[in-house]
Image (cartoon, rainbow, N blue to C red; front, side, top):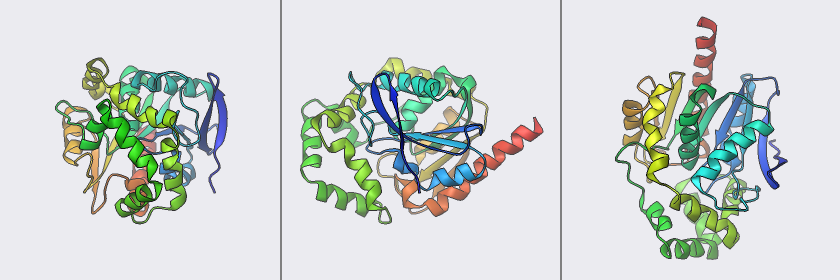
Length: 281
């Protein structure tokens, strides 16, 4: 059973999962919106069993982590990754990202390519020409986004039903953890602030991801309603030409909790290939 730990970081409580030996190579898993570290519930024990320390934070404002006492902007989440790694005495990581966790984690990787041992990217992309999905565009629109968030918060039962329709096999405890971001106006604003913080200055460095030559695996849900699998192939073509792509049949956006039995072998394959590369270098 996974148990969240807590640490104080810049005066705020941060909740996180941390499995494996501290001496093991670290894997940092970064979730998206509206998620928490529990997105990785099924993957963490499997990765740890291969001899890796697996660390998955609740990003500030999500799960049980306090929100920033300032704007929940893209830039501040990038600094959070640096601060978290420093607090945990981590220098390099194997990075696993999903959804907005990809926009944060991969943008961080643009600034620190030397700290990225390998990458697993799932259902997350920001290639040239990327178009935000309809819900994202609503969240980005002042006034409209606030009303959408209020509506979601006002009817938790309906939100739960919708998520169970989208992820039939999901455990209710995971959804409860995800729902934490809707509980208060302050946490709801975390989502709006994050989506509204996207700007060209942050997007342009994504062109430099091709400098990362370490192993990259791209995992995607075949029927993702938010980010089409076409972006998996565009990501490989424009950013990681050496990447391996796996599209999981008949799955949506939340593949790690929708089809863990299909995702886990691919994740294990990735880390076994990383070990092979290290042995042959």
